Amino acid sequence: MTFLKAFPFEDSPFFQHTVGFDRIFDQLETVQHNVERSQGDRSNYPPYNIVKTSDDTFTIELAVAGFSKENLDVETKENILSVKGTKNEEDGKRTFVHHGLASRSFERHFTLADHVEVVDGDIVNGVLVINLERVVPDVLKPKKIKLGSADPSSSKSTLLQEKLVGDYPTNEPHLM
Image 1 (cartoon, rainbow, N blue to C red):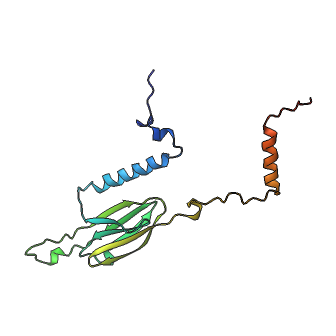
Image 2 (image 1 turned 90 degrees about the vertical axis):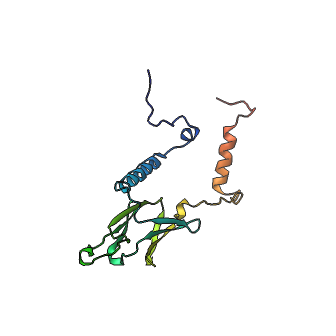
Image 3 (image 1 turned 180 degrees about the vertical axis):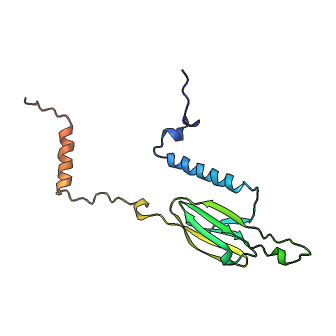
């Protein structure tokens, strides 16, 4: 009888030594969905950069020349940063000799890792700059455990010593 595996890589050593990482697969599926959605129009518009400015800070830069703050909508929902630009159709009022600046609406989605938050955003010289920061909660930060600080006369220390001594066999005969 042949058994089908849920994941083709479940024989890998990484998969054998991890527990509770199934959320990562859900996140990867979300990223794939966002990539497919953004490639639906096969457009790279508007161009953007993702810059790592330090270990815990990032900047997303989108080229939005011709867009005002009123034309842009930036929001986060469930670790997805969405940037939407809507452009009013004013081209009917103007006659162009050459029309080289893009003036179409767009929508971009960026998947944010856990604990990455949007700090602020602004338009600087036609570039939308969104600053992000990884804010790790104190509960998840590593803690140093100070060894040897327990008082030997404390009840916890005494109980632990009694339990350890009681668990080891001795040469004394046991009375029944």
